[in-house]
Length: 89
Image (cartoon, rainbow, N blue to C red; front, side):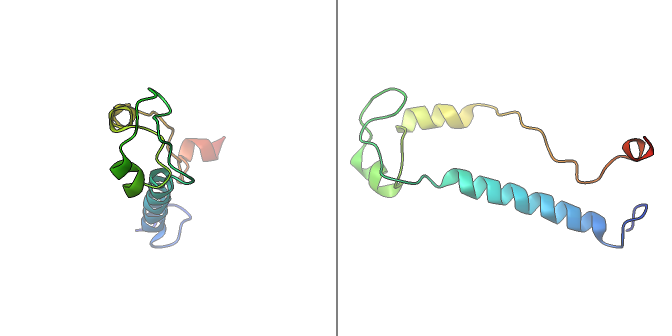
């Protein structure tokens, strides 16, 4: 399916690129780096040794990490396909 001046398959390429960008962002976010802390950076409770060994670079205890993961993060999406209105201006 072509749209406007785009070549055949351009829409699918845009969808694939958006998905790949999101996957890369999620992978980068998940991997802590550096040395694990012995105490949580937020509540100062001890981080269990098993957690520190399982996730190198961990900085939060399980409770604080669970609370952080539950928060909703609003972020703007990337509009790879400009609307026709914006092209007319």
